Image (cartoon, rainbow, N blue to C red; front, side):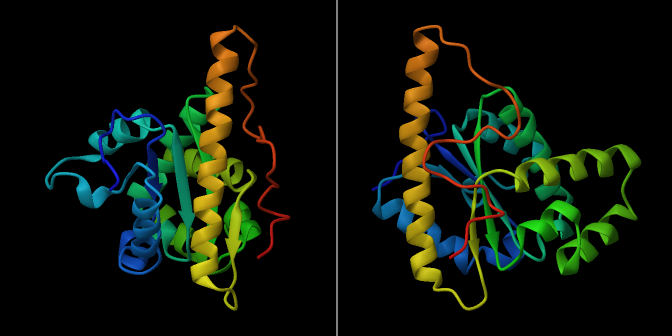
Length: 206
């Protein structure tokens, strides 16, 4: 049985559009994480009535974050603000982010085009210029990281297995990073840092 303590090492934070994925893809992913004893956090475990600052704390407590991009992701300013927080932590080497492209292309996320882009620019109309700039930078940066993509004709069950395998690999690599840090080796801080055994999202096909 998985433990949902925010203080346990290698906690995975799930960033996703709840109205679209909570009872479909994310529910299957949560079940797979539980079966594989992967510690994780999704917002349904958060107490009702708490604000975004509390979710920021959960992100900061995590080792890994999944940015699950879907067509309706950019309907939510909360998703976008979480993404900005994730990017800041990743830039400081305090968080590993795996982008998950759920029936949306990495290029559409990076350039805000297609249905994903339409929703982004609809949200942008009621947002400040500073917000839009930060959101755009986070989308561009994180969509350029190594990730996994699910197409319309792909098996979702197999895809969930791929995500679990990716998380397990990042957990192992994170352990190596911690060991290097302990021995004082210099670590890179650029946004496009890649872990061994993964390809960037633009070349990963399932």
